[in-house]
Length: 104
Image 1 (cartoon, rainbow, N blue to C red):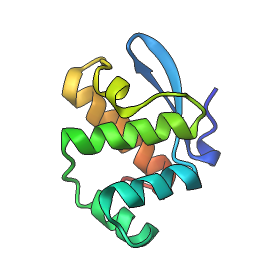
Image 2: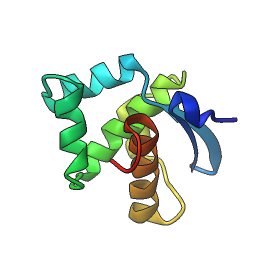
Image 3: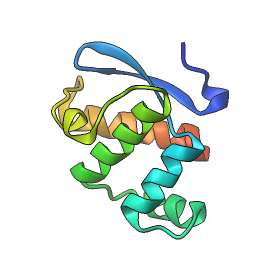
Image 4: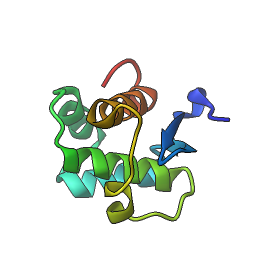
């Protein structure tokens, strides 16, 4: 069971329940992926509310890996979520909110 106080969430992907968490290592991975100088820049980028599908893949992949899953972004890109694109967007928003507080 996910512990929201640790920044964890649960999400249904490909019909399987997964825990996602943006650990410090996962956040460092995202800083590098997005060319962000620091966590403030990363949070500001996410706070704009404009994320591409590629952004969502990177965020979900980092969250899955942060929670211990051995998965690459190509596998994440092939996953399905209930509700399609809107479902993925909701999972990303929930994960960012759990990580940065409030809605990211």
